Image 1 (cartoon, rainbow, N blue to C red):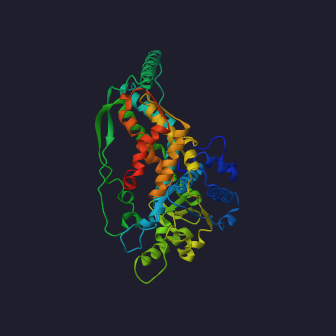
Image 2: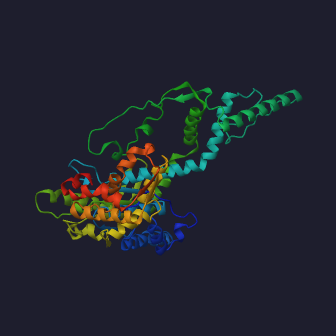
Image 3: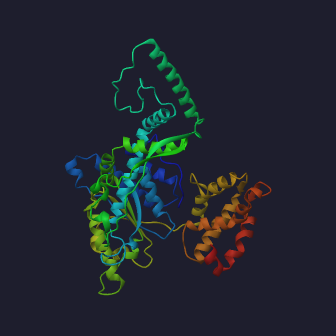
Length: 475
């Protein structure tokens, strides 16, 4: 069920063109089983795409179909939501509902989830802009380094700033032209050496700006961001720091200048506007452990705080405006996916107003032995494939027989039954224990080809699993 970082969505298929059935097929590559949950999130994602194609006056009234996933830990709730966000290239934030408390108690303000999501969107958008200007920034940096290594003659102009056309004319005369040609040949030679890395170790002197911004802390639960104050904007260049010249290697200088060029070429105001729009139209928040805050007003005890947290979360899910350092963010069309085991509490223990904001509810199945077998082998970067690839880096080849995979799956299911059921995460602990000796020996291991069969699995795990008290701590 929980399968780790694998390949992304097929680039040939645009998400806008994917039907819910195709979205489920894509999720199947990474997450085993849980068809009902996949269908629910596929429909929610497709509805978001449908909404974006509606006329603006109708789209504004179409609310996202928020989802509650009910299932024990390790069955794939988080992974399904995370994969969905990756497929849609949406800003995604996972947050535990239990870490929020009512205003006035110790804990984080619920609005911080929107600020964190906005930061993620800004980082995503900024990286996309960096990719767009990377080629131009690289050329600019190259010219700046060449200007340092081979300063242009007074009659020539630096090629550095491609945005500004030069008005300088080279001086007339054959001698001057010949000098310029020689300089250009030398510069091209340096350029070739620079691109091949032959000049990386040469020292150059560049101007760097020291960052000298003071740390200012404000007392109070909300702090500086919630007050909507950006001290750098207020104080302008007062704390920009002074420039000084430093010697560094060419490769280090290029890295420093590359960051400087990216900052120069990217309009952060435009990035912030695009990020806010991205959050408002396609942001996704995964509210985990929502069952931990389920509780009704009882007049005293923890239920008071739990209901208070629910009432604080309610306006965020309903739709409100949150002040962030990048501007005001409306939460009306952010998709919320809540999840919880609901072993003790029930979804109906949530306050009615919050229940009404999560119209779709899906129950995830507990994992069986067959599910564990599929998790070990089927997904793109399944657990066994990960361990094989890691040991391959040290020249060790791991071969798992079919009966070994059966034994691992059976051990995982048995330990989950005997102790706490942590779902597919149990496979991680089983595999670590199973391969402990091989991982420790690493490159010193002989022979280099290791065959893992059922007998080897039994030998490594049987005693540990038999001792139930010990297995609580080891597996």
